[in-house]
Amino acid sequence: MVPAANREINVTSIVSIEGLKKTYAGGFEALKGIDLEIEEGEVLALLGPNGAGKTTLISIVCGIAMPSAGRVTVGGHDVVRDFRAARNLIGLVPQELHVEAFETVISTVRFSRGLFGKKADDALIEQILKDLSLWDKRDSRIMALSGGMKRRVMIAKALSHEPRVLFLDEPTAGVDVELRQSMWDVMRALKERGVTIILTTHYIEEAEAMADRVGVINKGELLLVEQTETLMRRMGKKTLTVDIEPPLEALPPSLARAGVELAPGGRQIVYTYDTAAEKTGITDLLADIRAAGLHLVDLNTRQSSLEDIFVGLVTESAQ
Amino acid sequence: MNLQAIRAIYLFEMARTFRTIWQSIVSPVLSTSLYFIVFGAAIGSRIETVEGVSYGAFIVPGLIMLTVLQQSVSNAAFGIYFPKFTGTIYELLSAPVTVIEIVIGYVGAAATKALMIGVVILITATFFVDLHIAHPVWMAAFLVMTCFSFAMLGFIIGIWARNFEQLQLVPLLVITPLVFLGGSFYSISMLPPFWQTVTMFNPVVYLISGFRWAFFGMADVPVAASLGAIALFAGLCLAAIWAIFRTGWRLRS
Ligand SMILES: Nc1ncnc2c1ncn2[C@@H]1O[C@H](COP(=O)(O)OP(=O)(O)OP(=O)(O)O)[C@@H](O)[C@H]1O
Ligand SMILES: [Mg+2]
Image 1: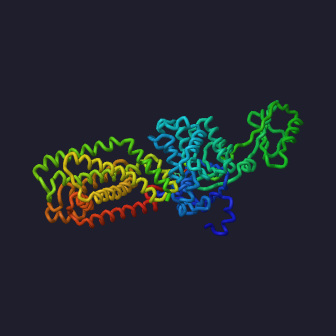
Image 2: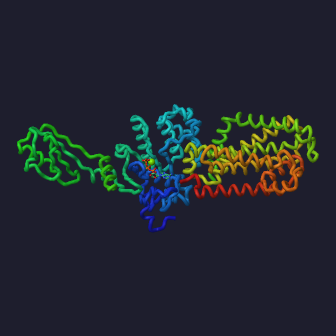
């Protein structure tokens, strides 16, 4: 049972991770005390460079690796002590392609459902295979499939037992653009049905498109977890670039202010501003440019992406 | 009990067996036939009877045990080693299954295959010698118990093995000598006293003796000792498997 004090906090979290540490047999500390609450029904994207500890974290929650310290519960069930109840809720698509080469697609998916203690349900499996564009390949041996198809077989296996929490470790690695879109559709449909999804990815646009929240991990530490939008807004800077005529040697004093720079070559004025601020100062700047007798040739704005934020965070933590 | 999981694992493993069923059966049948020709017909024509049983018939229980032990160990070892090797074991490790369920599924399938081969050899043997089985129920019971307990040993070997060489090593270096020295082809009473004592430390002696008792009503050691030895061995293996899954040894990092 969850102690009364914790129950309040855990009311909406389906996955609760407290002080999780992992030291591998060789002595390498892959996780250095992770605390994370994952809410039921949300899509959480875990970002982080190679070797950050994303797969290690997922492996512990799913029962593939053992925690060295700390506690993980899924649906209130401890993943070590009460593993059966916890794992009943979890579907896992690991990062590496591990498939039963000699089996057919449909038999391997049926096997997964049985392994998780669910009664055979051919209608459901047909639906899953159709959603993942695998229905035509149902009787093919897995070894005769392409890499992207094999990955989808692994997703089908994970979905076959109707998990409430789905872990996708780089689900769209090696999947072509069109299929990636259709996999996002599958994820969205699962989310509609209330499935909680935790995905890791190196494609920032995937996190931006799919995730309600983003967590950034580096060197075994969770640097932040934030609503995707808040993160974008809080840390998101916009840049306004104004192409001017004639070129300038230096910025006139009337234009000098915080965030304004003259690009090398003198043909562009670059203004970096905070989208969250009360006043962006754009109108004033443009008026001052015109007042300075400069001709406005073109202008554009750019929102910094999650990638910029992410790279910024990781380099910051490296210092 | 997650009965669906046991069923899924068992059927999955049996499907794998049936894909290569002919290879699995042809080679034991062929080698057993060769043993009968060499030992039963050629050598047996000089020995005639051992404790009142024709030599050809006398070696049948030992021959069945030889193949059944090798098969149980190597089927079960391969059955769990292969998913470890390909990585598909992730699914088993993340599934809501207990040790007992995993063992019943994998060990049960490996034992079933060994049992089938044992029966095929028994049938083959009837083409070469006249067999009258004194205690058919006990014969079946000994066969089943042997298949299960040695499949558990194989299962442990499969988890322990880090490569295919190690996987082959134990059946080859341990099982085969133990069976050959366990009285498959001779009665323990034929040995000098010193070796009779040494032989008593070979667990396979108890198996073969009990099994032969079921066939011909005569044994090297008391039947109760045979049953006790199998039960002890099976208990040790089960305890070892339980400990392996509890600690995650060679399975979970
Ligand atoms: N079985 C293992 N034994 C020892 N060290 C390991 C093991 N598995 C992972 N590690 C180490 O733990 C660290 C974290 O690895 P992990 O696979 O969790 O990273 P990741 O964030 O998933 O990286 P990637 O984006 O490349 O998949 C790495 O330094 C890795 O070398
Ligand atoms: Mg990884």
